[in-house]
Image (cartoon, rainbow, N blue to C red; front, side, top):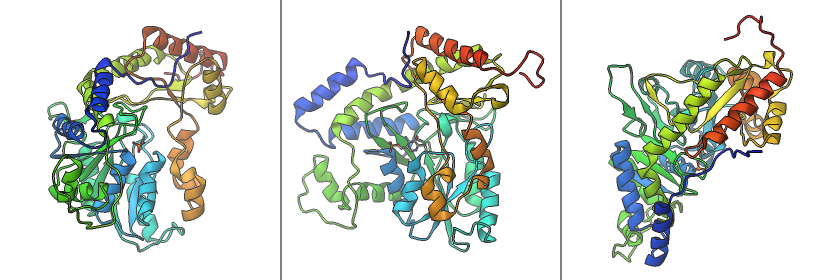
Amino acid sequence: MVQVPFFRPEIGEAEIEEVVAVMRSGWLTSGPRVKRFEAEFSSFVGAQHALALNSCTAALHLAIEALHVKAGDVVIVPTMTFAATAEVVRYLGAIPLLVDCDPSTLNIDFDDAERKIADLRAGRLPGLPADAPIVGVIPVHVGGFMIAVDAMRAFAKKHGLWLVEDAAHSLPSSWRADESSEWIRCGHDTADVTCFSFYANKTLTTGEGGMATTPSAELAERMQIMSLHGLSIDAWARYSGGKSWDYKIVAPGFKYNLTDVAAAIGIHQLARAEEMRAGRERVALRYFEEFSAVAEIELPANDANRIHSWHLYPIRLRLEFLSIDRNAFFDALREEGIGCSVHWRPLHLHPYYQQTFGWQEDHCPVATREWERLVSIPIFSGMSDDEIGRVVAVVRSLCARYSRATASVSGRQ
Ligand SMILES: *Cc1c(COP(=O)(O)O)cnc(C)c1O
């Protein structure tokens, strides 16, 4: 039986040789390779400034610290995201205002964000402080399908909010307003700060790692200082091969710098980022074709005005056509040797957010409904035809085996 992992990183000889070269060089922590990775990354996405960090979580934390988030502030966060997006808000004692998702893309729904602001102000969210300042928004491009940049910016501008993108899935992703507009790549001045992840199963990996990009020299400087113990920029130069020994602590910072060992991997992953995206797109296109006539599942959103990174390929079960639920379907996939995952149990359904801020299922009804039918199936650049074929065959046969639909069911597509 062909086993198909949920994800397999594509680590080439170039990455391996570069890591060995770092080991031989004797300079293991942040040094010349981090500098090179930052320079190549910023030119790849078209950013003014790029800061390499040891995770996307670190990037998000530094971004909102640099934007002066204080205890008691409110920050708008989509409920359909990973733990990191909201936890960084809590690191600073601020409060996430959770917002429901768009049923088609699973990205943040700005209409619901308007409702949540009104609900907060009217005291209809009793677990949250009704008159606390709302300072910013952290949209997530779920799976690498970009939120419309114009809508995202217009929302932030209307409410006077800063905008930090959680772009953990979006390397590379692009958006354009319409067929006649220019493509805008995620990180190319799309927000005040854009945060990328290089975790082991992301589209570009350094094992653990992240990057913050920004058009603002001021934010870049603050994030750099805070990423290394709050040492002044001069002192920072010590770590990147400079001469200054007399460091000055200007704030109680963190320890978030990336190592040269990790950057060595990142440099060569970045060089293949487009090629690897094309590899994932090939898998996605094959899935669209093979599953188009399978009534029991819905396929992810795609759009001519997006270049999709295809970090994830989440299918949604049409539970009314199936005799089993998502959990049983998931277990059946695993039993057939197919790695899969669920992105995600939304934040408002986690005990911490429920107990601390009073979130309930019906506060975000779309996410509550959709997550019960989500399954992410394998998609990665090095997937062989045999592996794709195996996933297709297993999904199709499970749908057929547990189908409740007959050929005459109306509403079939
Ligand atoms: C993976 C992920 C993160 C965290 O990335 P790390 O590099 O592991 O810190 C943040 N947000 C989203 C949406 C993610 O999927």
